Image (cartoon, rainbow, N blue to C red; front, side, top):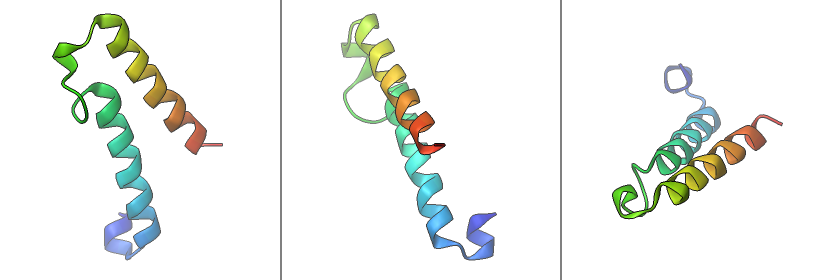
Length: 56
């Protein structure tokens, strides 16, 4: 919707949120399968905290 509306700020914000989520899930950054489960959980929790902070 933001793209169709021509709202560049909203598009950038959405892309930032998607990037944070993908990093938290291990789709971006270090290879998740090389990490111990605790490290994967910690990365996901950090991403969730960053995403939650964007809503404040």
